[in-house]
Amino acid sequence: MKYKPMGLLLLGLLCGCSVLNPFHKTEDKTALNQPNPFLWEASKDKLQNLALATENPKEGLLATTWQKSGNTEFKIEVKVVSSVLSSNALKVAVYERQSAAEKGTANLALEKAVEQEIFNEARALYRQSLALK
Image (cartoon, rainbow, N blue to C red; front, side, top):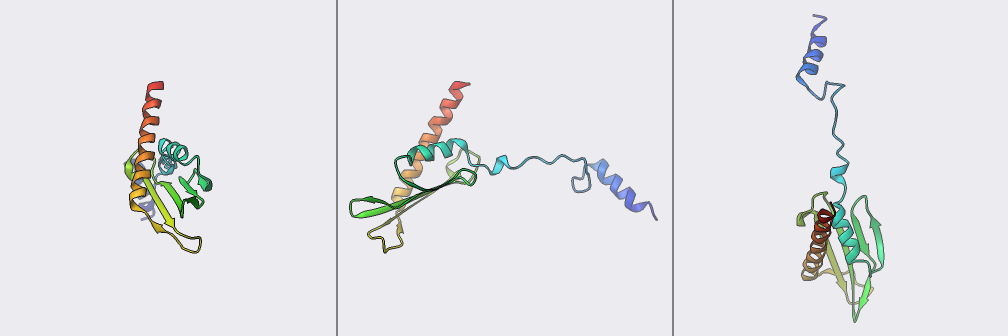
């Protein structure tokens, strides 16, 4: 009866059970949580003429301050949520308001346009990186 736990541990080691196997190598999943470098650079390129309130490369977050354009102010937030170069890896929010007292409402048409511009730039950067190899 004493040898059952040891037998289970040995069985786990032989079968490759990662929970019980102290020699099992775990994959480094931090790279999967990093924002895609092409989407990140393209986002920075497209927002370079606007004042940034937030720039966090580890979380993939860029946010501008409120920018004045005529009678309207707008703010853009870009979040790169994946390491994959995909349109699903990019979240863009554009807010506009008439005065500083307002919170701001989403502008879906402008969001899609900004998202498309960033994604097109990211694809171009990716193609350039392939040409350099």
